[in-house]
Image (cartoon, rainbow over all chains, first blue to last red; front, side, top):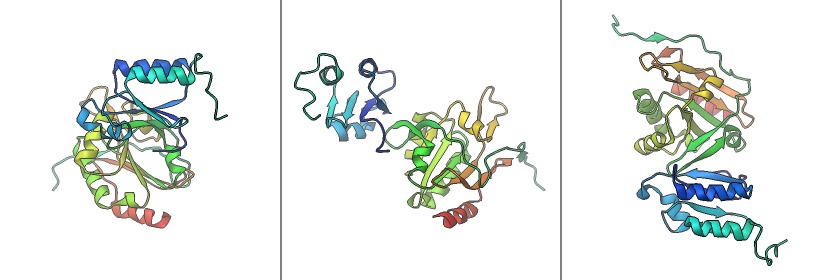
Length: 95
Length: 169
């Protein structure tokens, strides 16, 4: 909607534990993110399909890295590697 | 002789032409998802028509959005609604009215109260909603035109709103 928001957009479903797992990780790393809530019915999630290729949530888009991902385990792993304390030593190459 | 009852609503103290409309942030619902959006982030992009309306499903909501959809005001400025209905109900309304307009969800009616257009409902204990109201805002959130229902039910003078839009954009 607006282009001046946070780099990370989280597509989520209300009361979805997998989504909350990602939220906890985002909050743990104090990352700025925006939440976009979608419908429980998979058929009504075309926006998620468009960005990630699947209709599952959670899904995130990280404009800072150009990364789009689904599946909470993958997302948590990505956040740990990119923003966690054990991020790869090769990180920061763009700086 | 008219034998039905049109209720007079009490005087409303709302932002009038020339005043600055209060900013707020609420979930803004489109056809696919909702996210928190501020009114000022919309006015930053140009004029906005902010429309308060009764809860989704009540006939005035249907009538108002049919008319505003058919007038295609969205081609000329940002048109957004605000009601006490949940994002799920807003998605249904957007789909059923087949409209491009987005709707703020304000179940606690705080935005309507901030604008002085709240309407407590007789026979629905503990429930209030917005009375129908239209605010045309420029890019600084200055009110260019304001109309607030003084009766219940009551509908905007759409031609008058359109004249105000014509004068602004």
